[in-house]
Image (cartoon, rainbow over all chains, first blue to last red; front, side, top):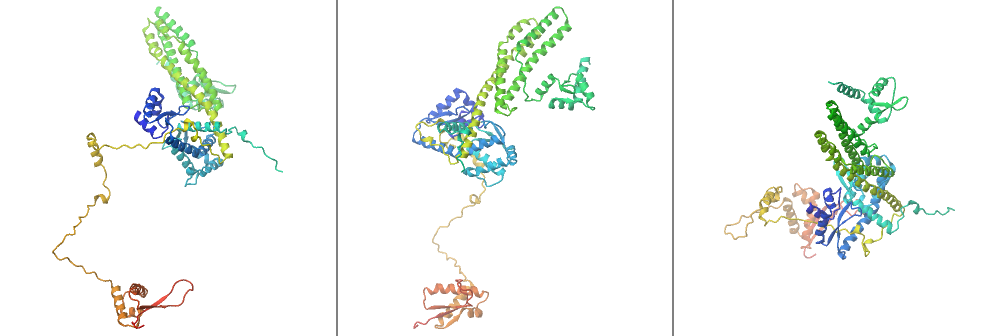
Length: 207
Length: 409
């Protein structure tokens, strides 16, 4: 367990209940977490987790110029992911007809989503808009093709895992917890208005 | 078969016989009498399977509903019995009645009271088991039985309060006092010990775990509510500001923890061929490698050395192609007849077989180009065909005339 877990952490993976249930439970034990942290310290890394401790990952212990360069790449990747992931989360609330955003552990059925989107032109149009993001362009212009590409890219980015190949059930990974944390950070520090009334502009008169 | 057993069998047959009616009452909540079902409804009412809903309608009796909810793992809201003190009092009463019957040697009554005590003990065990399973289902499904966030929070809060009471009630129980009561009744003692004393702490721990999960879940629900607002608000903001990019937080002195992720390392491992312990395994792997390319299978040709040999080498004479022989004849004639123009087409018609005129002309032209570089006296004139299309860039040639100019000219 220890060796497999370390290898996954060193390869940059997020350890959560979905991506690695055994590893995640292992790290719930403070003694185990301390041992892992001690090993990582020898490489000048440390064990870190999201605020809610829904996912663990390896972080730099000392932030020198090399580490800062790597962190910059992480941030730039977040920049690329920001808009499409927010759009995906918002769209899923509509597709699933619920007033809660997706959480780690939630499941998505490909066939269920496809059925909903195919019968709702507004959702189909929203799915179409993903084509403006480079990583979501699909050779297949159908709803099915676009939805496949959307879920595939989210798997590649680490937000989803294909939990069942036969029934095409996807599960949300703990990495989403990291995304929410980052989103919250930006909203607070850049004072992004999230109450929709705050962005109402005062309309001037037409004449 | 006793009368009771017969009665039970009759009841179960009736339930089976009217299963559709009962299912309708269970799922719709009420079933109304009509000409066809009146007799069946009356029978079910007599057996206490159905009770009156209103003047015309019937519903399923409460206890049967509870049984069906449990058997079907229904996610309907259920009551949690938290008043264990009442249950303990009932049990103590039954034990007391049993002891009285035992003293008075009323063996029949003893059996009945023992059956009641068993039923009470199993009842509590079943109820705790059922409550635990139901609550686990709610937690694992994250209150999937209700849709909105507000409803989930309400249910969560409700069950936390009930569960706290239940856990406290179990803690407050003193089942050891029951054991003291029945020290002289080994059957009851064993029953209480195995079904109650040993199991209660397990139920308590499981319910406590569920309670902890419910509290965490309530916290998460509050977070989820905030997150839903965050997502929707951000989505709206991004729609209004499509070119928005967050500031570069990676350049700050203090880097937010969530972006402090290491660069993924590419890990490789190799077997050490010098490690003798691995020898057998490596041989086995090597033997399994498929040889499926001809390159690997083909034997390399033996290269001969450039050795001096006294034996005469076999000479191979290369035959010139026919057209080259015929070209040589034509050009020899041109060179011999100095100053005389000789038509290539005329020569071809007279001496050349099996070559198309157009191909013969191409060969003549090619050979003249080759020779003309060394021998400028070899002149060529293209005899053109009709002018054809103007400005096409092409010359249509119908004949080539060669002349070997004399040295004086």
